[in-house]
Image (tube, rainbow, N blue to C red; front, side, top):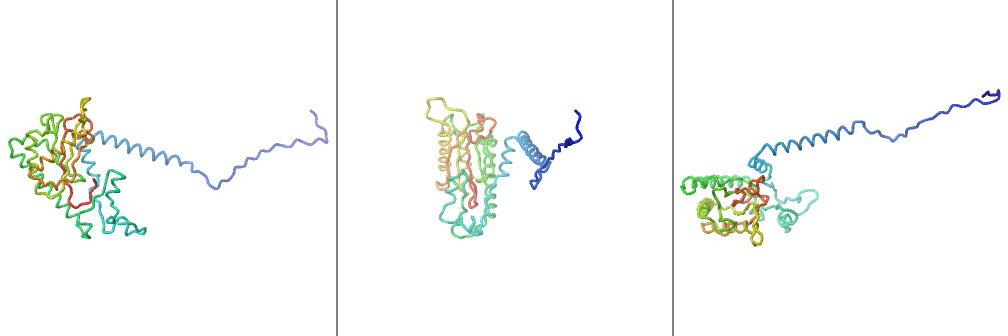
Length: 290
C-alpha cells in the first residue's frame, strides 16, 4: 500500500526487560555442598553396615563396652553450681538419682562418702576395684582347674568388665544347664559351680547384682509361668544359693530377671547360651551408670 507524503513513518516497537535487584544472588554451586554432605553420610552409613557384618558378637560387645562411659567425673558443688547460671548441686536435697530414673533408664549413682564432704579419689578406687576383680577372676579360674568335677565347666563361665562392674556369667550350653528344664531348681553341678564362685567373691566388699536370663522359647499356652517370671525366679534361686555359701545378705544390691531381652547371641534368640545367670560385682565408690 502506497504511503502518502504526509503519512508518519511507523515507529519501531522496543521491548525493555528489567531484572529486579534483590540485593543478593544465590551461589550457583550451593547444591554441590548439600550433595557432598549426603554422599559422605551415606558412605559412613555403609561403612557402619560393613563393620557390623564383618565382626562377631564378642567383638561387637567389646566395641560397645569400649565406647560406653564407665566414669562420670565430678567436682565438689557440681551440676552447674559453680557456673554463671548457678543452680543446685548434686548433693542438694533434690535426688538426682530419682529424677534420672523417672525420665530414662540410666541413673547416676553418687560416690560413697561424697555426702560427707570427703574428697574421694575415684581413680585410686577404680584401680583397687580392678585389682580386686583380677584376683577374684584368678581364684575362680584356679578353683575350676583344680576341681575334677568342674574343670570342664571352665568354658561355661565368662568374665567381662562393664559400666556396672565385673560381670561373671554362668552360661548354659547344649551339654550343661544351670537349672532343670523350665524351672528355678538348680542342678547339682550348678550348685557346685556357685559354691566356688561364692568362695571367690566372699571377701570382696563390692555390692552384688544378680540377673537372670532366658532364651526366647515360649511356654505352652495355658501355663501361668512365662520367661519374665522364670528369669526372676532363677535370679532369686541364685541369690539364695550364694547366701547359703557365705555371702552376707547385705551384699546384694539388685536381683532381677530380664527374660530374653538381653540375649547372649542376638542372631539366634533360641540359642541355649542365652539361658544364663549374671553375677556382677559393682564398683565401690565410683560414679557409675546403671
